[in-house]
Amino acid sequence: MTGRRGPAIDGVRSASHLGLHVGADWSAACHVYPDRSPILTVRLGLTSVTFSPVANVVTSDHVDFAYALIGAVNDYLVECERIRFASNETAEPRAA
Image (cartoon, rainbow, N blue to C red):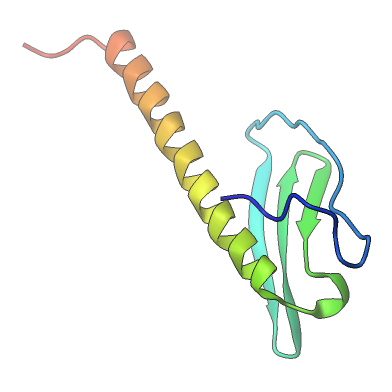
């Protein structure tokens, strides 16, 4: 699932590309507040990336983004597990 591809109504577009390698020094958190929109934070080492709606206005686009993020993270998890478990099977001899 992807967001809109055409021109933005208000002229504001999401833009950037950031490639980060995941080591052991990471964290991910969703900060929730009673009177404003949530903030999703991902930290890798000294780099922090946050996601939040513009002006605290949550629209259907934000909900679609959250669902797409869940799907992409799940795909990432499944692929990482597949590779990890495959490498564990080749590295560890089986007991007879």
